Length: 396
Image (cartoon, rainbow, N blue to C red; front, top):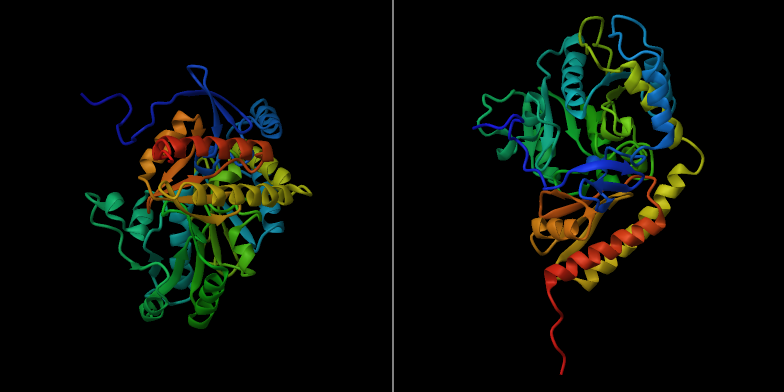
């Protein structure tokens, strides 16, 4: 008999009833250090006072009107995002999946309105994850996400990760855009080197293509800057955002240049809930915190401390860990042991991490995590690794 909740998740046997900062409290009373942050969503931790105040005040005033009317909070958040990014305009969604759908539509409409309707093809990459909508799974095209859901949305070319020759050869007169994550999250925390991101920008400029960046997981401060692409010193045409922008409240966005968005006119896209007064009140509070002086300095300091500690763990436990990769507070441990074993051992040590492809484990703590909490997480990971490795061999 099918359960009342559709059984599409392989859930861990944990039920959290309260969150506070970097900590989660299980129904049985155990206290877990949260280095998953709801898969990079709770960027400011659990129950951050500024977010609680913003949501509570807005909830007492107005919840929803729809986009048939002006929404002052939406305008305020759009203005903040434009002021702190490459973008000229913003469309608000409820999730990263919805942001992907719009990004694909926006790129194709851009060329349609320029009398180039044949330019619909989007180049994407192996290991990517762009959500679970029709466009998202067609863009990623992994067997796990697409099996049984055909026919897939056409218009995507899939290339191996970091194969420059294949990329050059894939561009045709039908190519509209290149879609890529500056750091693959689900793919195993695989960062795209800055020089490669610069090369993609140059390639798009040379061929008149749009550069679409999926920053749903790596954006909103996760790498120590508001957006991950800032480290490369480039400006994309379209960026997909979600997760951290709402700090735990469902919110997403598509940021775009005026040129890229020029085809999106009245009636070309819409959302009933997107950019609601509630969501944008929280989003404004998130932006205020992240753009405050010293916020990203803190992220960089604790990220450096965490990475150094993880490197020591790799050196200490080579039978469990192979390498550290990632940027800022979006770090991954490539595991030698099965990552599912490491995940379970971390649960046993009351530490939350997130599995990923390529036998990796993601560490995505709140951006507000303290140095002391990082030390505690490292100690718990060390215990987890010792549990897997077993007792040290006896010396004679």
